[in-house]
Image (cartoon, rainbow, N blue to C red; front, side, top):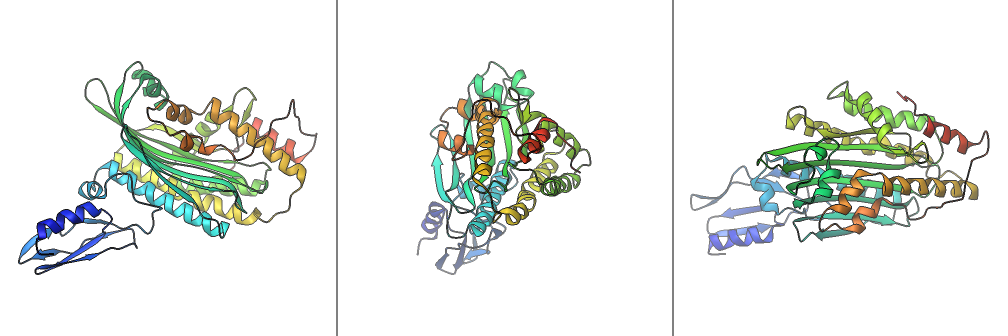
Length: 385
C-alpha cells in the first residue's frame, strides 16, 4: 500500500485489526484473533511514527464477538471507566460462556449482537435445551442516551428519588447472567455487575456501581451453599471486611418474594449506589466479584450434574422456577429499569426467565420433606459463613 495515510484510514475502518507492522514503504496487515490485551508494535515509515508506540491492542479470542463500542474509541480512551468496564464485562462474558460450553459438551451459545437506535447496544449469549443447562443466558449491554422519569426512578435505590421527575442523559454498561440447569439438584445462579453515569440538571456527572451474585437451589445442599458464600466472602474481603456482611444482608432483603413471605434463594451478595471511595478501587472490587462467579458455581455444577432425580423432583423444580418468575416480573428493579428504557430489547431483558415453570393452586410441601427443608430456609435466611 503506497499511500500510508490511506492505509491507516483503512486500518481504522477494519476495526478488527489487532496489530499492524509498517516496514519502510510497505504496510503489512496482521489480523490477530488470539489473546486479550497487548501493546502494539512501534510503527515507522521512513523515520515517521505512523501509530502510537504504546497503543493498546484489542485482541478478541477471549470475547464472544466484537465489542459494542468502536475498537478505535476503546483504544484511544484506555483510562476511561467506560472503557475499563466494557473491557472487563467482555472478558467475563467470554470466560463464563466458554466454561459453560466446556461443561455442556457439543452445544454452543447462540451469540446475538444487537444495536439500539437510541445509542449503544449489547451482546446476548443464550444456550437452550442443553444436556446440563436447560437455559443459560449471559448478556452485556453498553447503552447511552436520555432516560425518561420512570426509568430514572428504577435506576438507583437512593438517587432515583433525588432525580425523580426529570429526563436525564445517561450511560450504563454491565453484564447480567442467569443459568438454569436441567437437573433439580443443581441450583440456578444469577449475577449482575454494572456501572452508571448520569448527568444531572446542573451538568454534574454522577457515577456509581452496582451488582451481586446469588444462588437459587431447588434442593438444599448445605455444603454447596457454604462453598458459594465462602467464595464470595473471599472476593469481598480482599477489598473490605465490611463488604460481605453488609452485602449479604442486602441480598437477603432485596431478593424477597413479598407476597409469598419467602426469599428467592439462599442469597449471596447484592449492592447498589456504590460510589463512596475512589472509582478505581470500586472497579477493582466489582472485578473481583465478577471473577468469583465461576469458582463459586462450577464445582457445584460438576458435583451434581449427573445426580439422579425423580419426576416429583422435577415438578418441585418447576414450582420453584415459577417463584423465580414472580420475583423477576413483580419486584426486580433491573427488569423494570430495562423495560422502561427507550429502545429496550425485551428478548434480552426477559432472558432471565426459565424455559419451563409451573404453578399449582395452594401447593404446600409434605411435612419433614426435602422440599419443606428448603422452604424453611427461604423463610428464615441463615448465616452460612
